[in-house]
Image 1 (cartoon, rainbow, N blue to C red):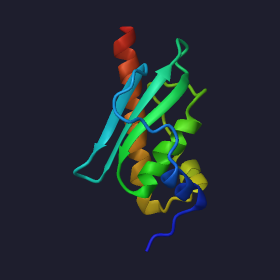
Image 2 (cartoon, helix red, strand yellow):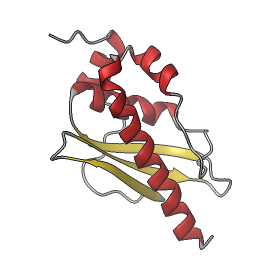
Image 3 (tube, helix red, strand yellow):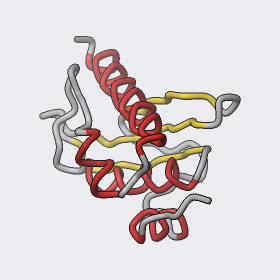
Image 4 (cartoon, one colour):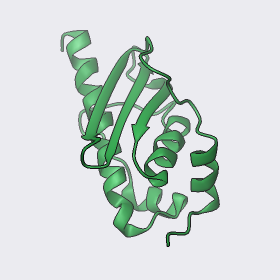
Length: 126
């Protein structure tokens, strides 16, 4: 039986910035698959300086996946979105107290955020 940290339980029970369908943010990025059990979509409003000003999410998966996506929507505003965007997996595992076997959730989130960057590039014609 998995035990969830207080932060995971809080974000799972009361997710922040969950999108109920399509919204009109600047860019979106998706990664993972429902068939494999972990799917995340981020919808970001990105300023001209490529800093995130707002983040929303939709996700399918375990409580850790939902909580991670919710937590990231609070973590991302003010951060720059760039081609080599990488999440500090160790920091996230520590803050959310995720078990190591759930680190794949962080990788899926990172892939979704990289897809957002690619969408910024397409939209700006870079």
